[in-house]
Amino acid sequence: MSKVITVSYKGNFQTEIKAGKQKILTDRKGEILSPSELTAAAVTSCAMTVLSIVIENENMNFEDSYVEVEKQTDLTVYRITEIKLVFHLRKEYSEEIRKKAETAVKEMCVVGRSLSSDITQNYTFIYDVE
Image 1 (cartoon, rainbow, N blue to C red):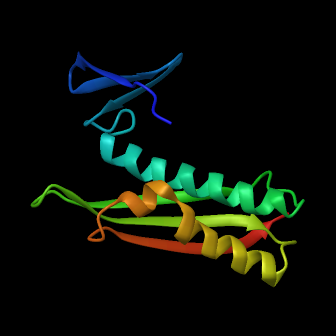
Image 2: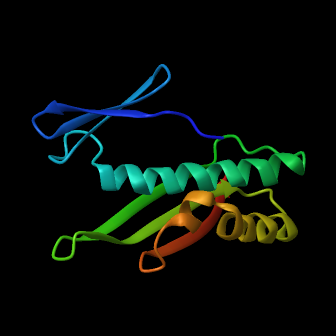
């Protein structure tokens, strides 16, 4: 399904992204999300959505799980080179659920799978959420 998204330039290196009633601002100065940070956040949000589907389909609690994400860029070639995601998930998940979830993130995240294979995607799973 496709949704029309409008991006407008607001001056001072900032853009405003509108999708329905939602708005996201980006800039290049580090005051708010940069477009490359938004890319890393999109991968993360997609991965969390996949995880929520897998975990909740097993009738398990997914609340309070979170991800810390970092991205590396190479400004000599103007590319994101690496996205690192550190997932913090609930301790109570069995080994079977953990394997299923970890595999699903890598195989079902549309955003991550759509990025160039030149971008290294590192996933770390830590089961420390109470």
